Amino acid sequence: MAKSMTKQPLSIADTLKQAWQDLRADHPHMRIRDAAATLGVSEAELLATDCGNRVIRLRAHWPALLSAVGTLGPVMALTRNAFAVQESTGLYEDIRPCGDAILIAGHHIALCLLIGIWHSGFAVTEETHLGPRHSLQFFDTGGEAVHKIYLTEHADAGLYRRLVDIFRADDQSPNPVLPAHGPNPPLGDLKQCAELPESWRRLLLADTSEAAVTGRIGMPALRAFMQQLAALMLPIQVLVGNPGALQLHDGPIQNLKITGPWFNILDQRFNLHLNEMAVAGADIVQLRYRQHALTGLLVRGQNRQTIASVFGGYDDTIGENGFWRDLLLASALAGGS
Image (tube, rainbow, N blue to C red; front, side, top):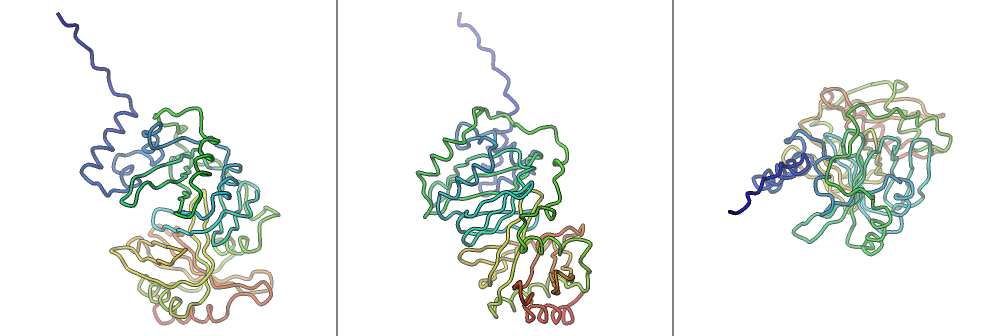
């Protein structure tokens, strides 16, 4: 008589992986962030279920790893929060520590990465209609994505594979590795870092109590203002961040497009995706920085959180672009809310 076999119960990781596979079968174009929310887990927990297959867990040696990224050539840096996504293509150069952060000032890329709250990182391979897409993805203690780096067609794939081998963690089990959920560890005040460049110090001050709100515009007026900026090719600074990363674009914008609820800037080396449905309005803020006036636009969510920030071009000698300031204040008068 044949010996009966007892079916072993699925592990938590196996159960979650199966649920993700079932969800993708029904919704093949669903992004992993949305899938994680649907399944009631974090993105890092969901990603970890594929460790040993298309996902490789990395050792938490963030400064050394980020320095190695600088050898890969052109990559795409992505930083997002719940309602805005910013993507910049360029080089990771001039990488230096500043308190709890790593500052990167490369060609077409400017980043302030608060690695003090980074908890886990993965090398990820995704299949697309154009072939495999490789990335490095980093998450905080709650499993929220804080920063992602995607290889471009001009990046060095061989050096990328070597980087992954060097920083590959010993533990490649598919089990989630997050600590007990809680707030991210406290970080020092970045503005107190003596090595913080003036450009970052100035931008960080605009979203503090030192800035006075002097006006407010709604989403239609914000959209029209951005169209004016694009038509004039006026250099601006656009900042998107989350607790673990700040990403800055510095230059003009050109190609604007509305896709469903998303307001998009689709330029060659810079993309911004802003969920208009989440925008409650944009505050105009003014303050004094050094001997100059500084005027910024803080895009706010329904809970008054800052989704994205927009500033004018700035010169350390003469201050901000006066045309930027006049154009913004005129927009407030014409379409304020």
